[in-house]
Structures are given as C-alpha cells and as structure tokens.
Image 1 (cartoon, rainbow, N blue to C red):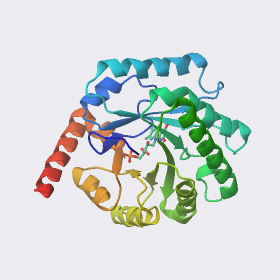
Image 2: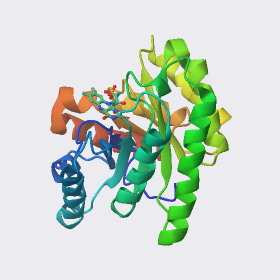
Image 3: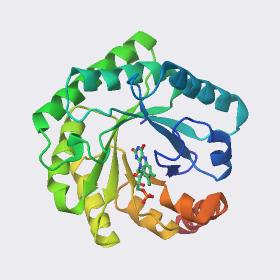
Image 4: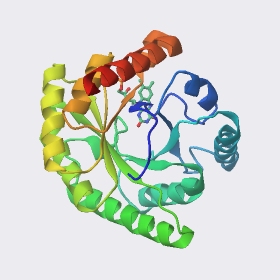
Length: 259
Ligand SMILES: Cc1cc2nc3c(=O)[nH]c(=O)nc-3n(C[C@H](O)[C@H](O)[C@H](O)COP(=O)(O)O)c2cc1C
C-alpha cells in the first residue's frame, strides 16, 4: 500500500463513525484507525454531517503526534447495485481523498445484497471496475495516490462465494483486501483460510478482522500471511488500557522472535 504503519493493529470500522475520537483512540496505541462507515447519500448523511467529519479529520491532524494512519470506510445503504450505489462510492472517494491515508470500499454491510451468497458477481465486477476507474482518475487529477482497499465479510458457510469477489478485486488491481471473518467455527479454520487467500492473492496486502482476542491471535494471523489486523470487540470488552497492553505485548513478542 506504500504506507508505513506504526504497528499492525488497527481499529475496525463502526466504532468511530465520524472521527470524533481519533486522539483518544490514538492513546490506546492503534497503528491505524478506520473511520466510518460513511454513507455520502444525502438521505443517509446530510452535507453538514459530512462537513463535520471532514472537520474532525482535519482537527486530528493538528492534535495527536504521532498520529495513527486514518482509513475512511465508504458504504452505500442501497440494497442493489445501480448507478445510485456506484455514485455513493465514487462521490465518497472524491470528498475524502485529501483527508484519508487509505480508503475502504465496504461491501460487508449486513443485509446488503453484496454479501449474500447469491449476489450477482457480474454487477459487483461493474461496481469495482467503476471504482477502479475513478481511482485512476483521482490519482491523475490530484497527483497523489491514496490506496483503495476492498472490505468483504466471509462467513464459513459462504466462503467460496466470497473468494470469487476477492479474486475480482485482486484482478482489477486494488491496493489491498480487508477480510472480516464472521461466524467461523474455530480460529484454526480462520488461519487456514487466511493462508489460502494469501497464497491466491500473491503479494496483495491483506487486513484481517474478526474474533481477535490476544497478541497470540495477531501473531498467528500475521504468520498466515496477513499484513495487518483490526479489532473492534476487544476494545469494547477490555477498554483502551487492555487494548494498549495487548499491542505492547505484541511488540515485545515480535522483538523476542526477531532476536
Ligand atoms: C456495533 C458494530 C458496528 C459496526 N459497524 C461497522 C461499519 O459501519 N462498517 C464496517 O465495515 N464494519 C462495521 N462493523 C464490523 C467491524 O468493523 C468488524 O469487522 C467486526 O466487529 C469483527 O471484528 P471483532 O470480532 O474484532 O469485533 C461493526 C461491528 C459492530 C459490532
């Protein structure tokens, strides 16, 4: 992704939807924080709300040093893929281009057709092609590169269907994949699947989220081929102090294993 992450543990999307908590979350030791998911459709979030998010992101640049990297998660509340859905993502990329270190295209919203087993792969391909095209245009127009990552949720029972979407995203040249493991019977199955995806997608950066409870879980997922991980529930259950302890213990494990 051509980015330097201070450490590989990030905060998953959904916790800080509008960027209000960045400096407090920074104190918990996260290497990166994903803001959102933001839906730019005016029926979901008003212009004032979007301006407020941009303001919070700008404020955070001045506040916390060193600042964790900031990802912006973009979504659409539409249940089918049409021009309106596509436009939600494209407009979001435009609005947040200058305010994010990386952008996530969230295809993992529960209830959306994009994560159902029967979702139309041809429509998803069209959506991702349009996003990729706008990405190239924005890079040229702004003479800057903001990496774009695709987030999908993989459930144990429909894992093959989602592997197909990952392969479309990989083929189109996105900068990374963010994979949310949901409803998996065991952490061993998750590790095996991370290994499989990592082999299929070659050198593409993988971010893994879902069920991470300890520094040991993080090390196993990184060892299976992920570049980064994210947590949500662990922060809720253990608070910022518990989160920080986990991240620090991870640092000492990595130092020990590097010696
Ligand atoms: C209350 C709640 C809200 C969430 N909102 C979002 C969201 O807006 N966008 C998103 O991509 N994921 C969202 N997620 C999913 C998390 O980002 C993450 O993928 C999931 O919680 C699994 O990680 P965990 O096991 O560490 O909690 C949400 C999760 C929870 C529990």
